[in-house]
Length: 397
Image (cartoon, rainbow, N blue to C red; front, side, top):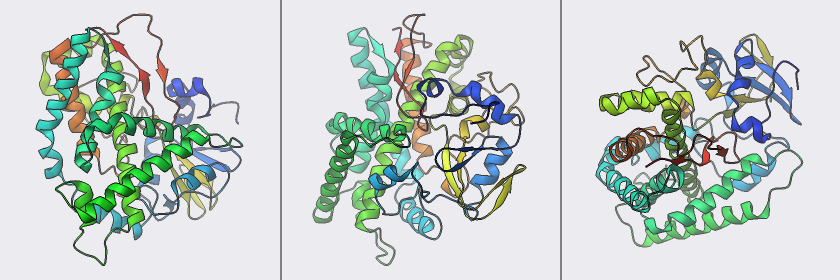
């Protein structure tokens, strides 16, 4: 590892606050390092955009090599939107987009609002508010459960499985995947496999039923592809929204003038959500593999090189964002990479934005501007670098 920068997603201290380490990555061309396989670090805004929008050169398929082998073994060989390239990705996204539409998402708004207020009622009655446990965690899982047609009371089991599986992100080279992670993935797969079979026999109005009943049978999702999408939706969909609400709450608590500004002018909610996503996004990085020898921003990557695309660093690039370290809920323009870019732009972005806006509106109405319960609050983060999120955040009520 070079002396002039530090990048180690397996270091707990690095994961707790990677932002100071991004400054060096933003000061020059992409770096290279050895993690048991050659890796590139792409961090500057222009370079990140170049990689994300060139899917022919930079593949989303899981790379070969020891660094990711156990994760690849865990998730299996079935294609998913996250880890495939055209034409497979094009087919999968088209099929899913038919039913994962803005209209379907918009129809969820009254129910999301109802769930959010119910969760805050419980927190207020207790006189204790941990935004992660009381709102940020249950809200998105319950919403996705209902979208999939699964009883929302199962959210605690879903969250347990989800948390365990996401811990696989922290299994470093040479470490064995813990059995509890393997067991959680198997249990989640078995559960949804049974739900998919049930929808074939008893279709309903939920998303799983709609995907099972895809009318163009020549393009229909296979059983394994459907299972991969449902698991991806649960893991990525609930965890990223949880982290948006948690990280955004912390940003407001640490920037009381901006929190007061938002409470005074609720019309700023849309731009505030975008600034939360930019400032401390729920996804720090994504991964690509070079399909050919290529140069990015002055650095040459050989064919087969894995590339960490550091979205959160690009979102603080001063070449794109004036005063990037400043949290500004009215920032314009604000074309961040929190949901990626190119053909893999997050299909669930409208749902995450909607849930975030509803959650923060409800919190501001109920408790006022977020304030840390104690000025001595010690922040703790979950064991994933890529999916950045607090494990706990107690706020004053």
